[in-house]
Amino acid sequence: MTDWIFPPASLPSLPVVGQDRRFPVRRILCVGQNYAAHAREMGADPDRAPPFFFAKPGDALVSDGADPVYPGETKDLHHEVELVCAIGPNGGIAGWAVGCDLTRRDLQAAAKANGRPWDASKGFDQSAPCGPLTLGSLPDPQGKIALSVNGVVRQSSRLSDMIWSPDEILVEAGKLWALMPGDLIFTGTPEGVGPLVPGDRAEATVDGLSPLIFTVQPRVGS
Ligand code: MN
Image (cartoon, rainbow, N blue to C red):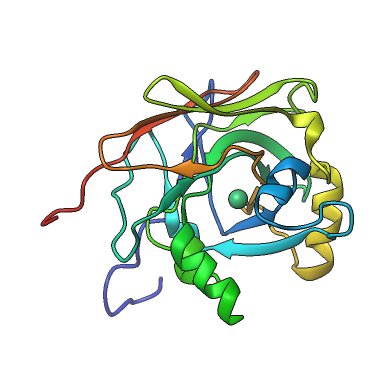
């Protein structure tokens, strides 16, 4: 048994719908601009862009109905509802969840303008709220993916509007990383991204999956 100099951090994990067992999370990869209308709203050409990826650390996960805290160093925190696929023990997609790729949009814009990395705009603490995992095959491709804030619909699209399907994303990601059981892939957001402020209640849904619901908490001391 390893003799640690301090106790290791607990493993991030997701609850599994209908089971007492949990899904251990290893790391989080995210696809950029995977819906044409969102690519356009971000100023990109969806017809030419190959899928590109960025990452969040596994411990950015917010699960089990916990509420994320509004991060520091931003005045423009954005929601991005996304279908999440989870890599299982056989290396394929074992399950699905609804996630929210929280983004410091102002820092991301500055990073883009200066050719700098996205880590601080995408991979910050508590930047990956995620609902419970549903094991099984892909939800209905014609199903709806949506996010509302305080009961007002902000994002509403169909999974079929994705440019790259989850299986294609897996192939592309697998060229760049050795995907391992426990990896989560956020598959991109449809159009309608927008700001969240402390106190906002977000409800993110994908037809057939357990919803993700959270309220943005104010920062202590702010
Ligand atoms: Mn995203």
